[in-house]
Image 1 (cartoon, rainbow, N blue to C red):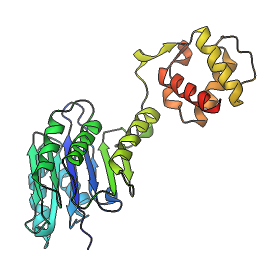
Image 2: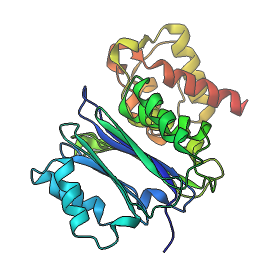
Image 3: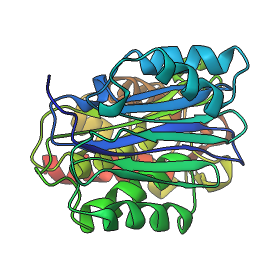
Image 4: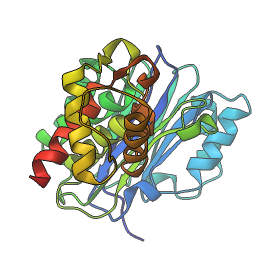
Length: 293
């Protein structure tokens, strides 16, 4: 059996109720093994000689009303290889529970804080866990970014003794998925990469751009000068055949929306009916135009 040499964090955001897991490992496709989460229920990280069943089973136990500690106790009672397991749970109330088996490979251990737990095995030392906890506690913003800040601190502190290969970030939020029909708010995986944490961090930035609507307060006016610039780009890109006269009329709007559909910018093209646009869309168009020059 392969050893999921791993450091991970499970946490609940008390402000949003988001529940999530972030993990990096010298193991192929760690995201298929370690992270599990369900909105309004909890999150689980299962690693070392990982028992993958701990993920769905732990969530079912917490969904049935058990606390993280009670669910962990039940999981371990039903497993004959508990000495080789490392598993952490956080429940809907932010209560955490962790187990590091006595036969997990050195260095292995965990640390528990308010609403979170950090854990790892085959690490360079305890300093990795300490750095994760301090980074998470000192971070701000959404849970996804805070989880990654913990992993980044772990890597700086030495991380996994065997190196790095894969990473994953999973955050559950009720109605948080694309289209609002599921709780899969953020689900990013890098299965095989020289710098998997850097790649997950890059993917999260793209997620925020492509799948997050802008704050209406940040929209800027489609002035005649800006509209003319956008029209010129749309002409060059083959989406617009009208005049570059700075008037944001129906033909220009249709062309912009068509282009946005091709580039997956739909969630960012809000405010057009008020003659406003997301400045990040303008930046995107300018980068594209410069690249095509």
